[in-house]
Every structure is written in structure tokens, then in C-alpha cells.
Image (cartoon, rainbow, N blue to C red; front, side):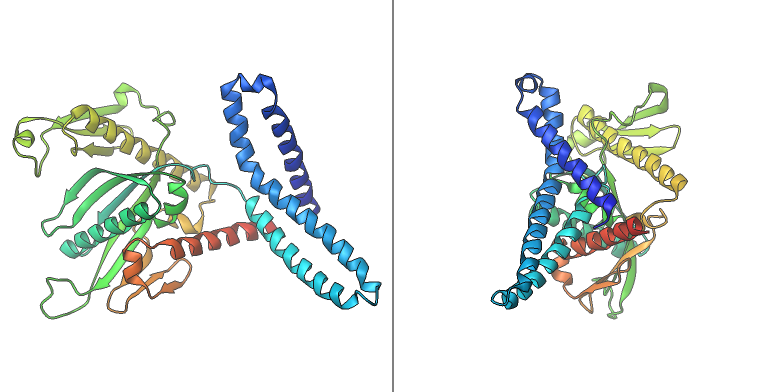
Length: 358
């Protein structure tokens, strides 16, 4: 292990001891803000300290096993034990390196998920509906909450555009690699001659801003319009101007919501979407300036960039960023994204480790 990495681990171990001492002091018990801050920091560094202590124990055992190699009676056993411990230490060092990788500050956030039909007309809109179901089923598997913020349905049952809020444990960390262009190849139900059509949708996964605190709007930056909601809803739709559209004038970004009967609630939801979109625009601009946007996120930043192909006739899904093909399209479309997600995370971690080694 590199000396610099060992020094960093020892510093973390020392800091953990300080945190433990502070958390047990009577003064901290009466200061809830400090207690929460220290508890959060402890939760972040504890896995690193535990892994480091396990590595130190393995290295101590290895040193002892190597001392047995000169003992004729223990020699055979010692060779096996040394080989086992060296392999174990190699894995423990790899685990520690991954634990020390820079954390994405957005990983713990809830998300605004946007799905838009692209090329392909009605078939693209139907595929947007399929993608929505896939992500909602994935949310169910992870016991996340979901809330449709706005939906523009197509005539055949899909969506021209749909925006959903997903809340729960580390939602962004598990969905952030879904942003980009999703292409589908299949025979549409409306195709009489059985020809395979290709259409596409775009997906955007935006980390939700914390209570709008990170995106501050001044009154003169916003134009708020109210109008009558369209679609199902009976007399309420015809008589009440409950739908809300908010325009951020400096950027031209627009968000609207008409799913709730309350104008106040629709405004609140639209503000969440607007804040996430503005924040994402700001983050994208910063990434471009720093020229350090990660390949697995949205590539060049163009969300029309193709990241994945869903080929229904062959029953396969291919993720083009990591050249991974899985022949389990039915399971994936039913929300079983775990294998895809883990492969993308592993590739991303490998890139980070490679960058650290340079």
C-alpha cells in the first residue's frame, strides 16, 4: 500500500477516535446540531476505519504466518496460510481504495426523473410509458416513494413527456447513470407487416435541490402563469385555473404542474422541478468549465446521446458505455436494474481508481 494512502487512513482513524470521544461527552448531548453533525461524520468514516482495522489484523496474521515458514512442522500449513492471507489483504486493500474514492455530494438526494419521447412518433411515446413503468417498478423494489409531477399523455397510452419525483434511500446514487438517450428496436402494435421499427426517448435524472435553498430565485426572475388543466377531471378541469407554469426568465427554463386540484400544491411541485432543472443547468456549466465531466454520466452533456438499446426481438439490452449486453429484457423492463446498475458503478469506480493511480 502506498505511503500516502496509509497516512490518509491513519488520519481518518485518528479523526474517528476524536469523534467517538466527542459523542460521548455530556456537552455534545445538549447540542443537537453538533451531535447530528458528528453522528453523520461518524457514519461516513466508520466503514473506512472498520476496513482499515481488518486490514491491519490481516497484516499482523500474515507476519506471524511468515515466521512459521522456518518451522519444519508448520511449514506446509504456513505456506497455505500465507497464500490465503496475501489474497485476503489484496482484496481488503482494493475495498479500502474504493471506500476512499471521492463521494458524489448528490448521491443521497432524491431525484426529479424526466422522460421525453423522441424520434419515432407514437411508438416513442409508448416506449416512454414502458420506461416510466420500468423505473417505477425499480422504485418499488427499493421501497422508494414516487409522485408524478406532470404528464403529457399520448393518444395511444404512452407519454410525450412525464416528470416524476422519486424519494428514498440514496436514490440519485442508483439512478444517476440513467441520463441519456434510450433506443428501442421492436415491432410496434400498429405495424401490420411485422417490420422492426427504431425509436428513442431521452431520460434526465436531476438531483433535487434541498428545500430550494441551493437555488435562490428573486421575484423578478420568475413569471408565474395559471391556467385551466387539460385532460381528465370533469367539471373541476373546466372551471378552476389550478394548473401552474413557472418560467425562469434568465435561462428560459420552464416547469409546469397540473396534476393536483390545488393551485398552491401545483405551484410547489413546479418550483421543485424548476429548481432541479436550474441547478442541473448550473452544474452542467461548471462541469464544462472544469472539463472533468465523467464519461458514464451524460457523456458530452447532450442528453440525446445514445446510452442504451432495448432490442425486443432478440430479447437483449445493450449499454453502449460499458459494452455490456444482457439477454434479460423482460426482467429489466420489470424493474430489475440491479445488474446493470452494479456494472455501471463498477466501471465508474475503476475509472476513478485509474485516475488516482496516474
